[in-house]
Length: 409
Image 1: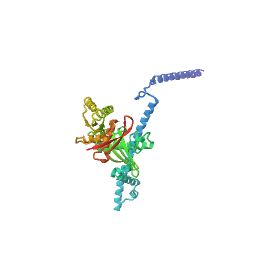
Image 2: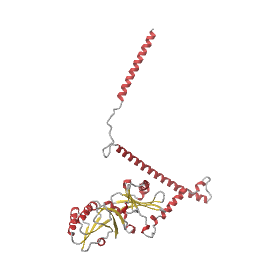
Image 3: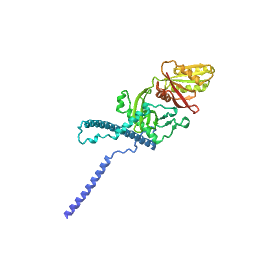
Image 4: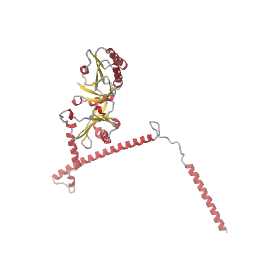
């Protein structure tokens, strides 16, 4: 009887102890639970929104960053393969000498065979040596010239179809876009590579896609494609020009040089007769583009007749007083208006010893600072192929017009 009572007492105390331990455990979990904040901070966006488009933009940015990183690693792997191939070629030459002397070790005969990659590289080098970008070619007429296409990261301008047939290709074909983006990435890898650091010790920054300004490209059907790419430099007047050649394969570096446009002056020559309203609009654009952004310019106005010539002088004097810009030349001719005659007189009026680019302009033309920069980059002193540049500008009535840019020495 006593034994049963004792077992029942022990069982009750056991149940009470288990319940007490469970209560203590529950209180401990409640006390140690971290404080939750229901108001989670939202991701900062430039627009101040947390919409789905913002998250998609962030994902796209991360994806682009990873893609550029993968492309960079791919280029590094290609360089390592090329270095390995050079070492293999050196080893092969050593084996050739050893075999000629009859001391080639056993088991190394397989390394004596020439690799297909070496033959392919030699073929690419032969294509580059025979391409027009290296040796030039003699053409029978101007109709045999292969036109260049200008491109940016968003647009390709095709001049082969003519200016009247919408040369801007929008949207750009996917294969064409992939080709140009791949070329720009290759150029960035070359410019940021260790070899480029050794060639240009003055470089202060790492190039990125945002530094790319424009490019020119054309394809020789029997050789390959040529790419002339322009990147921003360390200052607004410094640029880096990279020339690549794709011999129906990976692009190969031809040369890389820095382009300094600080001392390049553009002489804008305008034949004018009356039309004061159009001239006032032109001077307004001239102030914004040339005086405020690009001061290395000279304006030559060749005025025909005596009517309204005083108003032209007044506009030029007012511009000088307000901006302290004095690089003007006003020439008055008592003749019937002739555009060709005005351009000839404007060219002969340049008396300085400094080389100058002659911009044959009309009073209706609206140009930008980027256009003047493009003119400076593409013109080469003493190079006949760079003496004529065609640019597509928009005049006040949205009509395309061709503008001639000559180099005068």
